[in-house]
Every structure is written in structure tokens, then in C-alpha cells.
Image (cartoon, rainbow, N blue to C red; front, side, top):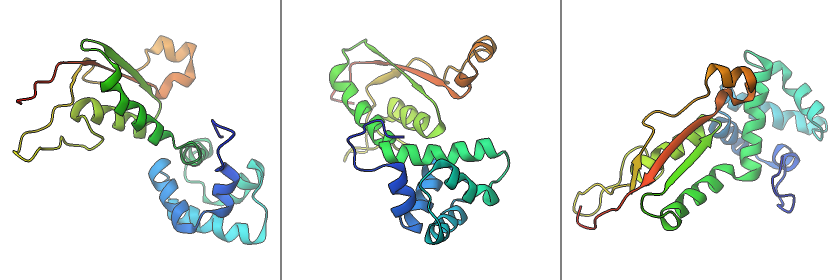
Length: 186
């Protein structure tokens, strides 16, 4: 699950070492798992009596907790672990913060996201220039502008033909923004 094998954190460490509270928050925030608290409790209890060093061991322990479609449930669980291990949202935020410095006026940035957490970050950054739901105000009550003109008000999603040819594209959302000149006296 690690994008960088040199990183110290790995999936086994997360599952076997994280506290119940930390697991709960990870599954709730990054996987949007409906029973994240129960899931965390169950993992902590299970690891006291058995090894959770393989995917098979881990999934077998979790099967009694599965809500709805097992494939979708496990996708959310493993998504949360992957995001935690790789600090994916942190990497996305770091990249977005660099865009205004490296993109020329009139240049466009295109980002494809694959889940709602990423999409929300990109949407807010293009719209508000930060990662919050609303724009920040300066000390004079003026709203800070993002410095971007949003080209795609709604994200572009795969066409039925694309979905037929590439089913894995089903969750992809593409957003486009153009860097604009921001006047200092807004």
C-alpha cells in the first residue's frame, strides 16, 4: 500500500499499532465507514488474540462487521488505510499550494480525483484558495480570491462509453481551473 517503500509507516503497523481512537478517526475520516467506531473496537480486540499480518487474516476478522456489499465495505476500509499510510490528502494539499507559484497567468490546471475527499479539497481550493468550505476574509472583511477562474462548474465525469471501456473510471471526476490575475486592491 505504500507509494514510497522508504517510509516508516505501513499498513501492518497501522492495523497492529494504532490506538482504538486513532483507528476510529482514520476509518471515519478517510474511508467514511459507517460503523468506524465498532470497526476500530473490533480490530483492537481481535489483535489481542490473533495475528493480523495478512490481508486474509484481516478480512476474516472483519467479515462479521460488514455493512452492505462486502466489496464496497472493504474498498472503504482499505482506502482509509492507504490514505493514512501515504498521507495522500496531505500530498494533494501540498501540490495545490504550489500551483499558484508555478502556473503562469492564463495557464490551466486539470485534476482528476477518485473519491469525494480528494474532490472536495480540489473544489474548495479552486473556489476559495484554501481547503475550507468558505473563503477566508482579511482584516478589512474582504474575501480573499482564489486566483483561479473555474472552467468546470461541475466536475466532468466519464461518459457511458468510457465506463463501458474502462469500468474503473466510474469514480473519476475531473476539474479544470485557469490562473487569473489577482488585483491587490480587491
